[in-house]
Image 1: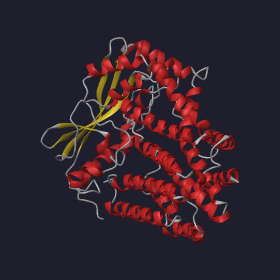
Image 2 (image 1 turned 30 degrees about the vertical axis):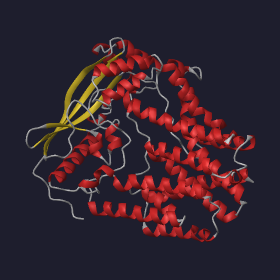
Image 3 (image 1 turned 120 degrees about the vertical axis):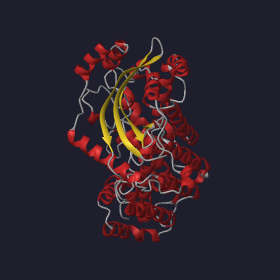
Image 4 (image 1 turned 90 degrees about the horizontal axis):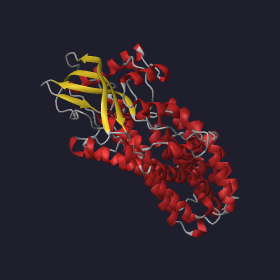
Length: 505
């Protein structure tokens, strides 16, 4: 019966809840959302078999995602009034979802669509809520025994969470000729070096970072093997409840290590993993007696493998080779008093993720060799970048052979228009944050912590009169531990016109 509940819930997720959320997020008309909620609302009349421990877990996930959506900055190039109303709507739907499960469909659609919540760092928690909604619909319609119903939910939520780690392990196993090639040959400390060059923890002196990197390089292989083990062990997590709890806690610790090493902050995943582990640990054994053991582990294995094959949901691959060379676009501003400041991704919220990754390559003519933080998908290219040792001639040959030019005049014009409109309106006094100044420390964290650079950060202290966009290349030299600036030139300057009047609400 538990296996039947899991199979039905997964089918409802794949063919019912997920398509409905996509459609409503793309076309969030009140009529469409109201009709969708009305269709499932009669099921709320059935008594819910949801245990209190799991109820509080669902409430916590809704709460921290609502916190993120409600406190993110406005896009000041668009009318502020509709954005403010969208945030108020999200708060209303969050409260409604806690009290009345069918409203969760509208909340997910609003979060993913109007609030741009469907981004990498929130995917796993949102999928947990979609899994819960599918379970609610199935159990309300079919009314399985309470113990099997709860066991089915534990299995579904656990599979959703752990699949986001098994998929990266599978991706890493496919990078080389052997499943252990990545673990044995990747130089993970290059990721730390690239993150430092990119803008993470630049408050630390480069000499101190170099010493840390030398020590980190000695444990690359143990760290890699441990990473893949934590990611892959989810395949057997449901053999025992204590094993599942330990694995969920380990995934949270893995994400904490990632943020310390690279500035990539999956705080939503950390919160969800800790919350789920706590909820499962507090469940009475009678509530989930069929969710662990060999039969349950087999059911979970099938679900996780199907998700890894992108047949249920689509976790990201997250498998690459780390390289010591990075090319990045940087933004800086000149204020009306003539002070030059760095414009870092946290100030560009709600687009902090875009400005923290590879945004802006379309402004430059240089071929780009890598993705975010210098990652490449070809081990030979990684080795050639290391062998180049920062030599401009060798790097130029590699760029011509392996690189790709992203230059796009249409996107460049759109980007310049966006920055011009944004800072003209900020100069005119447009409100950027939905929070009053005295509450801005309560804003939800970002996911890309590249908030440092060669210049002090701009924080809106005074109006801006010029924006300068630069292309930079940096390389970490493993032999000497030095960080070398190889290229630094201006690709675009934007002189701001007289401040525009604020948008009408």
